[in-house]
Image 1 (spheres, rainbow, N blue to C red):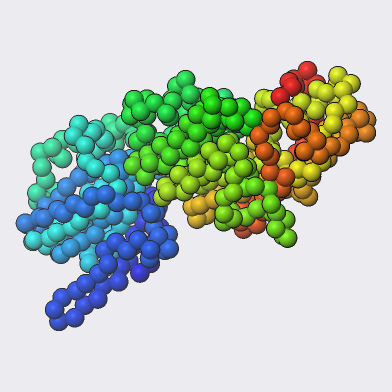
Image 2 (image 1 turned 90 degrees about the vertical axis):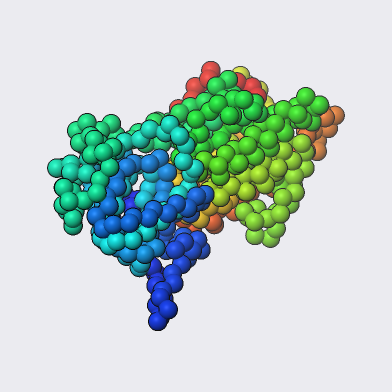
Length: 468
């Protein structure tokens, strides 16, 4: 068994193993583990259809359905042709071949397909990943379209073709099928803004446009129009999460909403990218000095517990990337901008020196997201931060003062226990270092955090910062 690409992106020919003897033949028409390992998408089929054709020459198509399918022959022989009906550079591209018991074809959504039987009593099947819905409109193409120039073995005038298929338009009259679009949830936050810049064609929503905790809003949203959903929405008020109202808000945004997206991802077939935090660990670092993706969760406070619950929920989706990060810095309120403002105001802050981790700039998270989606490593959890040696918040504050043209000695060290005394703050993990080996193994090399900090500060003015 092996998989062969074609000139139409995503259209894959599968050469199947057929076992024959005097009784007939047997084949594995869909074998998920084998086929996914060979490069076929794990497209999550939900329906299997059979088409029986009593006479040679029965010709159907060219139809463009909004779902993926795996087409194969049960008995007989079929000449099959495909035309790319998706908007883009390959619109109108064609591919054709003869299907027999040993050949199957994966047809992605938006590629028109047509089949002409070459023997009486031919049966072919197609395994699809969405249910047929009455009233669904999609492009069709005339079987004799001159630009497609499909080499039909049986002339169309001698073939059996329905009146409906004879009335299909030629290519110049076809409206291409629009591509599915990326959806960014939480687009107004620090990370959401970076994702919007990295994915400029994406649909951008915040809670006002789409409240994932509102069943009616979720039911009304056109999820089938998206192939990727980037969930940058989160409740991040760590200390307020310890209050009764904050606890409810944290669990709604950080646990319930991701669970809803995980369910929708499997229902509608999109890839879910969700962003998590090193707070899902208690901060105890092993001898290697970094939390790995498979380390058991051990959250301390309410915020951390709600994020951990979201991680578990997202992990149930078939197509998901859970991006775990730490110490996020972007556009908006954050530690770096606060320190920059304090330096400009002549304030000498005390900053904790026993919490250790790495900064993560939102542009780096967005770049890593694009890398994962384009490189296509195995679905699952990936740690992503900027690179370089771990630092404390005290180290970062001193660097901000220095790079802003102020004396770094104005920053004094303190412990987490001393800083938190009498303030009723939520617990913080002391060890926030994330091991980056897994994401590096995919070909992504994180930029050094201090280099990114220097560039970030150069782009900021002291007046832009606000106290967190």
